[in-house]
Image (cartoon, rainbow, N blue to C red; front, side):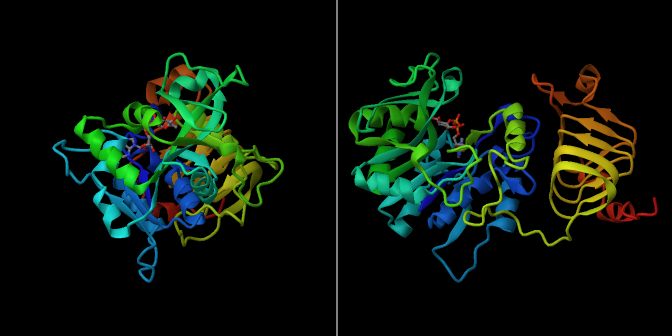
Length: 411
Ligand SMILES: Nc1ncnc2c1ncn2[C@@H]1O[C@H](COP(=O)(O)OP(=O)(O)O[C@H]2O[C@H](CO)[C@@H](O)[C@H](O)[C@H]2O)[C@@H](O)[C@H]1O
């Protein structure tokens, strides 16, 4: 069974996380960030999944209901959202290990020998059974999935030191000065925030942690465990997902922690030979079952564009961009290097460059966004990298009827 920790606030993704938690943030042409970890678990035959939520969970709950409701025929196959149980005297989850502590009773029903405790914030493919095999072969108590990261980014991660057998001898959460890997002075070995625990070790560890007031895996639990238990680093670079293309980045994994890295990860899906190719029938990425029609392009120029469903594009120019579903682009609009989320209408002649438009927005005719950042800053959020974010709009601005009327193609 698995606990997926999906309560993250994702404060550096604001305003995309102003109304939803990070795992619920839309990603790519039809996914939410959480779909990647859930897909990895389900494709790896780990299908009893509890999703632990905390910060602004409603959008995530709706998504799980629509996308991850599994047939009642298979009672051991489920994705269930678990709110804080308030079994401890703390009102809500204090941190990641406290979140799992509060749900330990769920293990009693399943009696697993091994429990996956995974984060929900990352874009990647992973065959978790290969990590399970590694864990068993090493007779580990705990395994931590790990990969090298550039030294200058190491302060964002839990940094691992191992001996030659892969056993973790030191763990420091987000150190200011991380030690590089012994054979690579430019990189440090980072935890991916995905753990396998022997069930009895997980229970005893979290009960002890709770007594001591420890609430977080990275800050409190793992540094101690690496001194007292057999904790192994599972090298993610060895993980093989079937049908990965030769042009894809080997071991692709992104912590889409900031708006700029989130946007970069979208670029990784574009092009003829994308770094991360979403088309892999051997490892389908699951998301909501949307029953609308396919997209409709009346005319215009499209170059390197990923289109979700039910978009209507009328005589517009779109380059290097991703449009999710039910987007309407009116004549004369120009869109370059953008992510346009669901239920957005781009008015006549509007020009957008290097912009993320969150759901339910109407961009007025003739608007220009992404060309004069000083002016954009007055209305929108602009990142250090010059990316403009148009925050979540109001669903009432743009009703279903209006969308249909706007679809008339007389012009
Ligand atoms: N109270 C709560 N209840 C439920 N879920 C919660 C939660 N608080 C956070 N989460 C979720 O837990 C996961 C870990 O999030 P954190 O913010 O605790 O750690 P961070 O991602 O910074 O580092 C972690 O992940 C990086 C890899 O990105 C590792 O290097 C590092 O050691 C590790 O601590 C995320 O999926 C998040 O959504």
